[in-house]
Each structure stands twice: as C-alpha cells, then as structure tokens.
Length: 157
Image 1 (cartoon, rainbow, N blue to C red):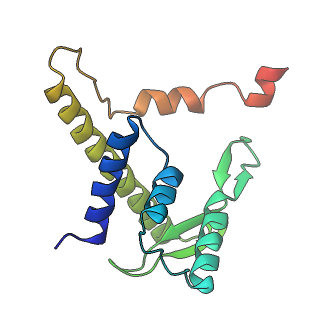
Image 2 (cartoon, rainbow, N blue to C red):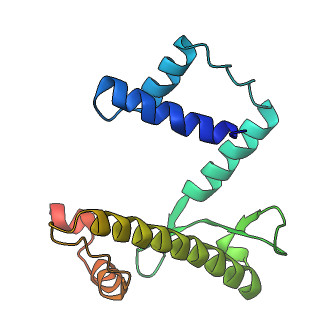
Image 3 (cartoon, rainbow, N blue to C red):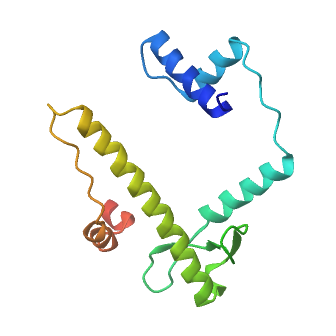
C-alpha cells in the first residue's frame, strides 16, 4: 500500500500532466480537495505557536557594535542527538552551545549540497546533449566577497 506522501506525489504528477504545465502547491491542494481528497485535521494550536516562535527566534537579527555586520540574535542547538532543539541568545551562549549550533547548521548545508549534487547529476545524465549543469560546493570565495562587499546603505549613498 502506498504511503500518503506517495499518493500525493502520484496525484501531483497526474495533475501536472492533466493541465500540461507546472503548478503551485495551492493549485494541487485545491484540485485534490475537488477530487475528494480527505482534508487534514487542523494542527494543535500549541504546535503552530511553537513553530512561529522558532521562526521568530531564527529571524531576529542584531548588528555587531564594532563591524556593523548583521548576525543572528539567537542560536539553535541540541543537547544530544535526537533531542528537541533549544534556543538561546547568541551573546550569552557558551562556546559549547555555539559549536553545536555551527555543527547543526553545517549539517543542514551538507544535506542541501548532497541533494543538489544528486539532482544535478540526474539531470545531466538524462540530458546528455546539453552542457552539464555544474554544482560548485566550495563557497569560500563567495562568502569572502560578500563579507567584504560594500554595505547596502553605503552603496545607496
């Protein structure tokens, strides 16, 4: 028996083929509802609020007093593998917490890079008559350039 996610993937392929174009997730949901798809139950309001807090924590920015560079005001880290993430103020974080935050975010980047490489490799394989799409994963130069780029307000002046 196909999982719910697999059924959704099949429906998405079917619907894109039916309309003959790429579609938004909103269009897919609307078409699925019209086709009699069972609508999901509303989420627990506490879970929704927790997710909103996590997004707010991750979005808060401050500026370094000396350099003026923006930085995230809060860090997310886990005490142990599999534990729920904790949030804390970066300015009060211990080195251990910061190391855990850097490791967590680096793992996310590695996962994105791995999947991007697999996606590009697949496209390159099935499109041998096109120039292959290259994936460059060494961001050292780009990060350095952006670190040394003129500040946005200086560019406008």
